[in-house]
Length: 237
Image (cartoon, rainbow, N blue to C red; front, side, top):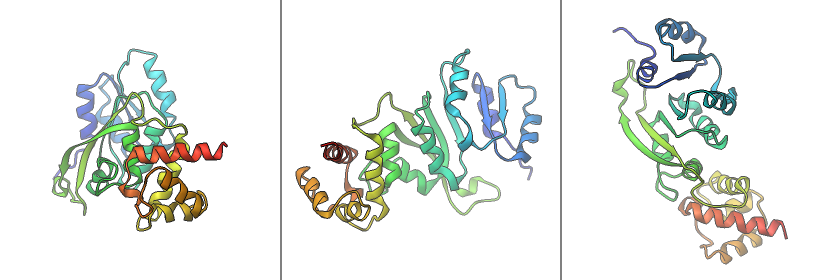
């Protein structure tokens, strides 16, 4: 069986005004440049996407004829979360992110906060975007077949975050602490994470009408936003 490289890139080039491809593997650079050398809407960057100044790159493109930018990729599964959070936290001027990731990770990314598959990343994704699963991709679709199944998901970037909060950094700190020890209650998780004393955390949860035995994974994004604003007010008194 002949292996064809750049299948996704080819489809994008045939349908998009311009495609900027970021590829770290130097072995692929020559292959892609050779295959797409006759496309005048193709630009290839040999770099680690985590090190690329995407905001500057996008701003330069928008100074030209480009008005709408979308990110499409088959992400390396071992760095899926860092890449997605980089794209979201940098507040890039983009419409959407469509990526193929490991199915187990996809189920967590597109779940609703408080859902059975939710994790800390779920809250981040739902804060910045409207997530949806496009299609599941069985491992038999690839040659050779990997051990895991995959899914394509689409994250439509919101014009404004889904909840209003005074301090985003504090919001995500609390979410991270809540999920660092998932089997523990939120009270113990935040206490062990040194957010405050057990008495202070108990007081906050009581004032916000939250069960002292609740686990972080059962809370909504709005619940975490309320905790963040409450704690910020406490810190600034």
